[in-house]
Amino acid sequence: MEQGDKETILIVDDTQFMRKMLRDIFEKCGFEIVGEASNGKEAVELYGELSPDLTTMDISMPEMDGIEALKAIIKIDPEAQVLMVSAMGFQGKVLEAVKAGAKNFIVKPLDEQKVIDIVNRILKK
Amino acid sequence: MDDLKDIKRVIKAFALASQQVVSQMTKCEIEIGKAYEKKESSSSYDYSFIIGIAGGYEGSVTMSLKEDTAFFIASAMLGGKPIEKFDDLAESTIREISNTVVALAFTKLEDGGDSAVDITPPTFMKGDSPSSAALNTNRTFVTTLDTPKGVIEFNISLLKTGD
Image (tube, rainbow over all chains, first blue to last red; front, top):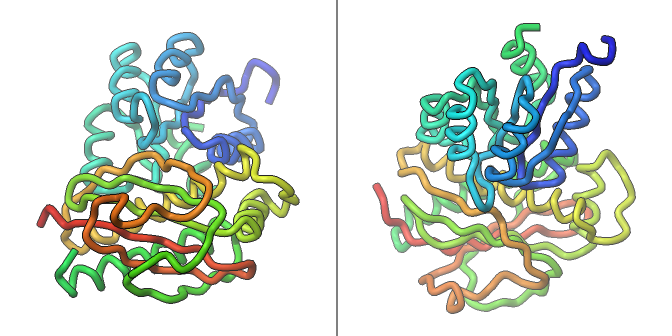
């Protein structure tokens, strides 16, 4: 894949470890990580600046949680591709995220191959 | 939690969730250890992560471990990288485990018919889990994991509010 052809991803999670884990997975597959955010407020700001092809979003975060951030991002960009990546796999949360515009929902702990398959499906690679 | 059936269900959910998460994230053999009601603090841990719970259950869950155990877990999660101090990255690996265990345990309880809960991001503190009195809850139950490098203890201080 040539420089400039890479699809871009914004990673949002309050845990440094998760951001690193997701970065490692995505970079191995040829995606470009254009930004990282550790809370929902930062995520919305960065989304506005960077317009990534895909955003991964945790739910349980300080300052602004992932569902609120998702809603704010969808308001900026109704076509935004947001993948929820969260330990909170409660039925209600999943439904709430999908209703708010998330393209899919992955429950932690992560299965690396599942993450890749879902991201490729969202980005239709 | 005063109903014995509830207590057993909650302890089982946490025991299974903690084993599943820690095994999967460290790729190590992790055994479920003891479970009991905590009467007084008898052990001394180096690090604790406290998670607040609201909704169908209210209270908190605290994960505590010694430094050696934390280094072992962090190293395993970071692909065997040697860990010599509890820096931000090491702390975040343990933080992620605490959050994932608690969320998975309550997902198991929700699958069994309990109401969903809201979970706060983990708060890190050095030392042991706060006492029940400090948390203003009635009873604290403990479930533990045996790792190759020591015990991880989960202190569960909850009141059931929802059906």
